[in-house]
Structures are given as C-alpha cells and as structure tokens.
Amino acid sequence: MDEFPYQKPAVFSSPSSLLIVDEAQASYKDDLFWGVIIKEQLEGAKQTDMRICLVCAYGSPTTGVEPGTFTPATLNTTQRISLTADQAPYSPPIGIFFDRPEFDDAISRKIKYLYFDSFALDEEARDYIFSFTNGHPAAVDGIFTYIYHFYHSKIAHKELSVITKESVTSCLEEQEDVWRYLLHGCSIKRSFPDHRMEDGDADILTEILEHGSMKWNRENAAMGRCYLNGWIHKTLVCDTPNSVGKEYVVLPSRLHEKWVERHIGNEKALLGARFGTLQSLCIAALSRFSVMSLRHCSEGKKLSSGTGCRPVEAQYQDEFYKAFGSIAGRAVPIPSEWSRTKDGRVDFYIPEKKWAIEFLRDHRDIDKHVSRFHKGGAYYDWLQEGRIQEWIVINCATTLHTKVHPEPNLIHAIFLADYTMVRVFDHQGTKLDEARLRN
Image (tube, rainbow, N blue to C red; front, side):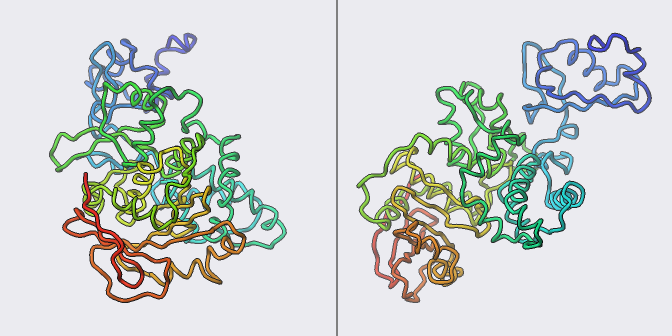
C-alpha cells in the first residue's frame, strides 16, 4: 500500500485476489511485511480471501525464510516449492523446474507459437537436452533457442525437418560459441557465477561440482555469498520419511556444472610432462576414487544438481573428474560431455594433449564404445582431423570380465570388496595396477 498509495485498501483484499511478490528475498528483514501481514495471513488473524505468492531467489527449505534480525513467520512444508519436487513429507509434488511432460509441452509450444518454420525435435534429442538442463526453464529456453538459430538456415530452406540427437551434439561441439550465445541476451546468464565472485567462491563451487553437493554451513562466508547470489541452492535431505532432515547446497543443473567447469578452466594451467601416456594418467586417477562416493552413488543416495540424486551411470565419470583435479590441479582444462547420462561426445577431452577418455560400466556395450573411435564411429572424424591423438575406453565394473578383447586402448577397472580396492587390467586381462581406495 505504501508503493501504491492511490489504491484503496480493498483492492489488496478483494475476493480471490492474488498478490505476487517478485524478488521476495529482499523482504526477509521487513518486520511489517513478515511480522504482521504474512503472520496474520498464516495464523488466520484476519479473515481475508487474499493469497500471497512469494518468488524468492533463495530461501530456507526448513522455514521458508532465512532468519534475519527478528523471528520470521515460518512457512510449513505444504507451502514451500523448491527447484524440483521436495522429498520432505507433505511437500507439494511439483517444482519450479519443468518435469519431463512439462518440458515436452514447453518445447512443443515454442515450436508451434514462436517459430514460423515447420520442424520437429525428436525424442532422443529431447532426452539429451532435458538431461543436462534438468528442466531449468531459462536453460531449456537458451539451449533450444541456440539450436534453432544454429540450424535456422537449413530449416528455412527445407533441408532439415527433424532435429535429432546427433544434430544437437554436433551444434554443441564448439562450446565457446554456446557460452557466447547464452551470455548475450539469454536470461540463463543471470544464474551463472560472474564478476561478483570473491576469494573462496570458486573453491566452494568446484567442491560442489566435484562432490555433487555440500552440507550447508552458515559460518562459511564464501558458501553464503554463492547462496545469496543465487549460484547455488539449498535443499533438505531426509534420511527417513519422518526425520528432521539436513540442509545441503547444490548447483541448479548440469549446465551450471559445465559453466563452473569452464570458469575454473579459464585459469589455465598445463598438465605438462607429468604423465607420459594417457593410460598412466587414467591409472593414477583411478587410484584416487573415493570409497564413500562410489558406495553412495551405487545406492542412489548421492545428491546432485537440481536437487536430484546423481544417476548411478554417472558415478565413475564424477569420480574421474574429481580425481583428475586432485592429481593434475583444478586449473588444467578437461572439458566433459554436456550430459552425464546420455551418449553424445567423449566423456572427457584434454585439449593440451588431445587426449580423449570414454567410460562405460559393467561391461555393457564394449564394442559399441570402442567402435566410436573407428571408421564410421562418432569420434572417427576427430581422429582423422588430428583433434584426438590418443584415446582410451575405461570399463568400470565390480566383477572381472574374462573375455579377451582385441582393442589395445581398452582397460578394465574392477572395484572389489565394496569399493575399497581397484584392480586395473588391460584388454587381454593382464593386471596393470592395484590400489586400495580411501574416503
């Protein structure tokens, strides 16, 4: 009413009225708003038919509001909606991000109402885009708009009627072009860490990138800054349906993980001559895998971006990225695949050495992964162009595969004794290394 003094008070409490407060986190220290208006509404002290919707860049998953200089009104579980559907008891079964049906609907509407061209996005392409945007509305909009503009000429001239997954992975190959587009005119850029970063912020973001999540620590100033800037989000993790739960912070999506990966990689350092071969580097990294991380991920308990659980199929890639940073340094660039769960391009690429690394799990589709580097395969052109000088396929499993394979660039990493030990074998079954893993 202070903002709109010319309006009559009845306007704000007319039947079925809805008050939407954007950037509502700026109101957290407002005694009048929270201590009187919101509190009266929650307690039913005033009989009004008005509803209030608060859209906040950050907020506590346990109270709804970050405690300020006063005791705020508490929003119960049924009144709070986070990025994705919360696991806490009685939480609404919806989130701010699109779920898969909502994602499909958004894409279909965008094609139908915003573009004058006739084209379609096939199911595999949709799966792939959803896998690394996590349904983040601004990420979905930015990535899909980039893809459309990339192929606009072909679509307009009727040379392309269906955008496939191969079309998507191809246009995302030049990652700097993608980032350049997203940073100029796309709303997603507001959620990326930027020039506001201070000392310690990059370490927090990288820790979350490597581990999937971090336990919330109110005393950690860098974590607090990242949270208040909207770069990370808090979520509640309940061990059992009736437990109080603990607060953790995550990155919003796999796309945001890629941004952090790029940002840290911008402070470039060289791998140098520390590892003479790609195989020796990979064996060293495998010995640094974490016992607890592997266990939690295999049990589906590892929290990840967008407040979801890390896909089991991504556990070995996650561990490799973290281990590589520990032995080579975080500033050595190692771009990873856009999606952690869908096939697209090589899992990891070290541009300094032109080394490519591909993972598979439990002996699945070994021939398929190996064939990608041979004639007719997805990565063969990179080899012919000299963009890949050395490559390796790492089969991670918990049982030894006795079958000999003819591909010398294949190695087997066998995790034994509940992930406390790893043994590495070559394509013929000869043991190359053995290491006891730590937490």
